[in-house]
Amino acid sequence: MSDLKELQEKVGKVSRELGHSDDPKIILLFFLEELGEVARAFLKEEGHKEDNKRIIETYKQEMGDVFFLLLRLAHVKDINLEEELDHTLQKLHTRSLEET
Image 1 (tube, helix red, strand yellow):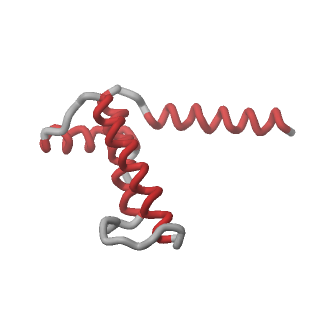
Image 2 (cartoon, one colour):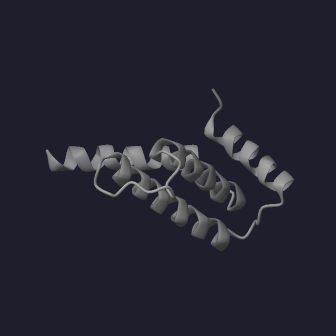
């Protein structure tokens, strides 16, 4: 299994090879679009949205697209996601302790 930094590098390499934009605003817009597709597919699969032929990927597959774009944005902005995740986990732990 790769660590997050390796995944970010891998996504960056693939994106360069495919000629994807390095503009973080464009990446963020695609990220938000894919997040909407996750929600739409989830609602369909859970029976809360009418089945239609436009929704062809499962929400699990769409989550792969979201993860790709999150890694892509982090790579372009030189953000260490592993460090940021550790920071978030520590923050949540501290808040939990404060509430008890």
